[in-house]
Image: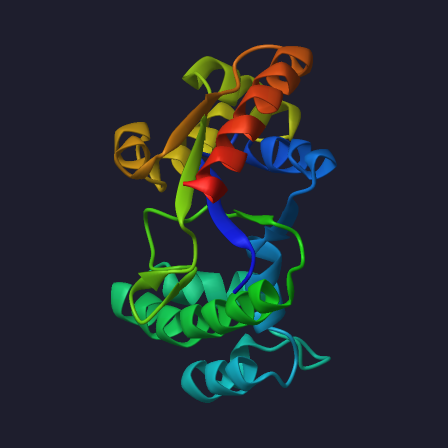
Length: 204
């Protein structure tokens, strides 16, 4: 793998995808890990066939695509059912990420991933595909404000935050923390400074 891989994560509403995209003009490639996760469920993929075999055809829509909300209702009521699903999906995501990283030509590739601390994603045989971790943070108030603009109620936003890792847990794995509490202009200045840090990582 020629590219230097960085895992970038943060809690919902912190602005991790905004940060990831701000690194692109400097020359970084960005891979959306959520999008890769969705591709695993595409019709007639290896994982799709396994999921249908395990959970039955009642999780399918009339056009044979997976009904994500129906599947979610099953797995989020039972830890054992969730574990079955993750055992199918996670290796599929990880293998696709490895394939994508092997094709990258940019010197730095950023994995934009909501789940880094919570699950063994972007790992092959327990070894992370990323060499460094960036964590994006924002205050609780600012995150709630942003999530309300997305149409979430405060209760929904709180529930989603509670289901994720805490700031403390993310900080334990962070090589770099970016605070995103201020304006986009201030964030852009911070990203410019951070880019020098990222380039330094390559040369370490």
